[in-house]
Length: 539
Ligand SMILES: [Zn+2]
Ligand SMILES: [Zn+2]
Ligand SMILES: [Zn+2]
Ligand SMILES: [Zn+2]
Image (tube, rainbow, N blue to C red; front, side):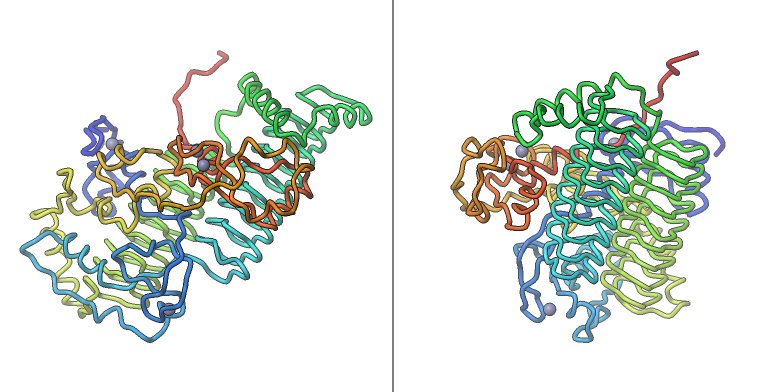
């Protein structure tokens, strides 16, 4: 088709646009055009990815204790790493015949509830039990989607960092606190988009700077406060007067800095070395539409957290050379994979979940090194190729219909009600926050929070203004969250500070926080990416 087309989203009923290039892509990978708009498709994919909700539970095979992304009350069978990758079970023993009298995805759901699943996504971490989406970390605690870090806590998407706390999207940095999208930084606090810098507070887009406060767009600068140059002596005198160790002063400085940011010129997107891209936080990419937090994308659209992907559409976390793939979540090294979740080193795979080093799978769960399987049943190549078009026709003739009446024909991602996770356990909640009623109204699962019987021993109002007034005995005590559960951020009402965390605050002279982790993360992570068409400011 060489004209664009407007369609009404089956889910939100808003109009969305399909371009001629999109039709070409859909034809190339042999799927019909989508019936959900791009945002609804993204939420649907994100609602399958539990990144941060961890629970203590037992492995259903060896009965050992694990920290898992599956709460103990989930209906799924969950195995620890050893059991999942061991020889004590055979995923093909759960194989099912295709029943052409009822929707295929109904049968997939049945299979999904029978076949054991991997407890979490962790690999080669040392002394770092409470992490997920994490590999090669040492002595880390509650870090997520993060690799190759040491002694870091409460952070998301950090890579090759050391001693980081409460940071997001940072790499090759050390001793940073509450910093976002910083690279090669040292002792950078409450700052954003800074590179190769040290000793910064509340700075934005500073490169190769040191000892600056509240400043924006600096290059090779030092001793600057709110974009005003000081001598070295004046700077340190002024710094003392700012009272950076006081929670109250920090709050004032933070709002002063944030309020000043709009006065400065911003580059139209955050990105470098791109050609023909529309998106944000995108690097070394070519011919991309709506690519976010990504690098090395080519001829791709609607990708969040992509790295090395070519000819891919609709992906959330798509890395390590994915090609010709569509509607995938948690995807590593794929060729021609569609509508799948947690697929690694696969080709010609569709509607599959947690399958690795496999090819030619359709509707399979937890398979490794397999080929020509449908619903975990082994076929010959000839049988598989004969059945496949029949199943696709069947998915269109008797499609899955969810509780909200939405129709899932061949080509759509898995329905949200088949997600193993509740909306508020997943990345969807952090990018598109909803309350329980809103989520249920939209057909998502919702998990009531565990009732925590932790009465706060210390109320946030009792916390001293600086770390100096805090004794070592605060570690382990429960502190009430300032939000008191009145927010929409999964507030856990109370929280505890670990001894390592307390040591960090003392070393950095930072007051202890007044918010629980969930509230903290939500505040920091409210970062749904947008692109706007705007007129040029200057003719
Ligand atoms: Zn929509
Ligand atoms: Zn086990
Ligand atoms: Zn809270
Ligand atoms: Zn809150």
